[in-house]
Picture 1: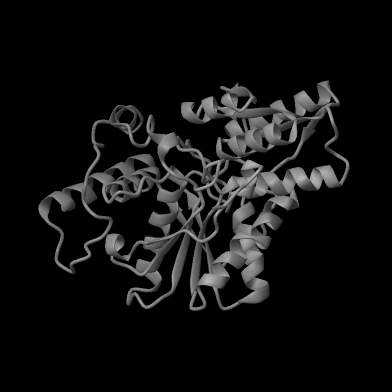
Picture 2: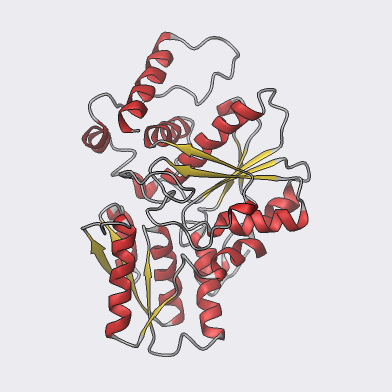
Length: 350
C-alpha cells in the first residue's frame, strides 16, 4: 500500500507504452498523465511554487496568478489549494471547458481572454492581462512559466533522469514545444550527461517558437504565439512541425487501439513518426516520446465530430485505421482515402 498526504506526492515516473504494435516503429511513449493534476505540468507547478516560497516571493495571503492554456492551470489550482493560496488562471477561448471546470472545482478563479493581442496573439493578450492584475494588487505573484528557470529545472531533475534510467540504448528523444520547459530541461540534461542522445523538438505549424510564421491554432498545448524566453536552440538537435489534422489523426488512431491521449501527445507522436521515417528509415533506433497528458479533457474538441467539422470542414471524420501499416502490405483503399483527406486538410490550413 502506498499512503500519501498531499496530492502532488503521487507522480509516477515509470509508465511507458510500447507503440510498436500500433505504429510499426520502435517507439516508447512516456506517459505523464497519471497524477492528480493529470499532466506533466505538475512538475513545473511544484518546482515554481516551492522555489517562490523558498525565495520569499510567496507569503501567507499571496495570490498566485499565471497564464495557461489549461494543464498548468489545473496543476497550479491543485498545488495552490493544497498549500493554502488563492489562484487566478488567465486563459483564453481555446481552453477546454472540462479544464476550466476542473480549475474552478479546485477553487481557482478563471479569467478568459477572448481578443488576441495584435502582435502576440491570444498568448500576448493573456500575459498583458496578468501584468495588469499584478500592477493593481501587490498580493498577486506571477510565477511566469515562460521565463522561470524552475520550469525547465523540474524536468532536468526528474523527467530526463527517469528516461535515462530506463533506456540505456536511447538514441533520440521527442519532446513537444510549448513554453519549452520540458524540452529545455531534457535537452540540457542529455547534453550534459549523454550528449550522443538527440533531442528533437516537436512544434505545431503556426507556432513562432522556432521562427515560423504565426498562424491560427485551435488546439492548446504545443505551440506558442510568443517566442519562449526559456528556449535555447543550441541544445535542440532538430525540429519537426506538425499540422493540426496530423495531430488529430494521431490521437484518433491511438484511441482506436484503446489509448486516449491529449492533443499534445498526438502532435508529439506524429512528429516522432515523421522524423523517424525521414531520418531512420531502417527502424534501428531507440526512441522515446513524451506524452504530456491524457485525452478526457479533449472529448468536446478533438474527439468530437461536430467540433472537428466546425473547425476543419466536412472533409473530416473519425477513422479507425492504425497509425502505420504494420504488416508491410500496401494500404487498402479506405486507408489511402484517409491519407488523401488528411493531406488535403493540411494543404488548406498551411
